[in-house]
Length: 380
Image (cartoon, rainbow, N blue to C red; front, side, top):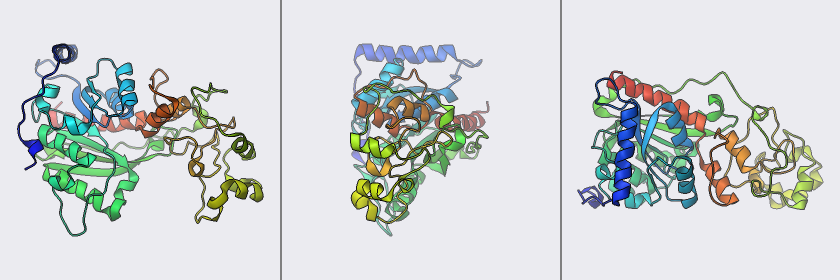
């Protein structure tokens, strides 16, 4: 058994931090107790790889109280702390947090946590013909997610990732992940959800894996959210007029001149081939449609997947009304963050935080369904 799984002395929190955590938990319960005075009305969750909070905010809106969030990137952790001073945010490497006594760290007993959420970066660790266990994936980010599962044994978990995880390493990576979830005592469901079908003005697909602890799986009635009838497009969100440089990247003079020729909804095939070839250079001879090159989004379509870098040649998304990339705040609206959600760090860090986030409204839709499943388990 991994030495991380042996009982280690809890790392003491500073007295002020410990007092604050206890006070926050007491206030949360006091404000939302059920009539039997034993349970909080809102379910409790811990999130790993929390980023700028898209998943956490959506789950909060669905009715979850976050008792802990772990995020390694300082700018993203500052974003979480700035917007939710009451959240217990650990700006630490999840590998370090996983070594500690997690029950003491988060003030919760094993089996008591309602939800563990997050999405670890995708890494290869499987081998054809071999059934891997937890120790075989040691050192990967997924390993530490699984350590949290083993140590805390939450009732349910939400593991989100890119659609490409299904085919990564010829499908072996995801198979190994599912095998380990099973070994740790969970029944799983997985499905690819497109954010556009859940009130998000963006075509963005995420692989959503839900786990339910085996001892309560028979009681759970989990169903993925039904698609919304509303299919928002860019016309449905606020777009800025000439945003300041601190909020928006800009094209070079040459790139702007070429993009000015592209009509909204068009791409490189919609301009003079000689100009397109000169701009695309070696990309001109690549196979495939290359539809992301010189791509200008129309007001009457959803955005393509919001990315972490607004200026990469093969994945350009030009603004429909102005010759520029979308500002980070416009990208945040496409990701359905509220305008009062503050992003910390440099402009490039803000773009990265927004691009890595799970759309808030997609998160909320999933969270509502998880809450319904927990209701069925708890008999509420």
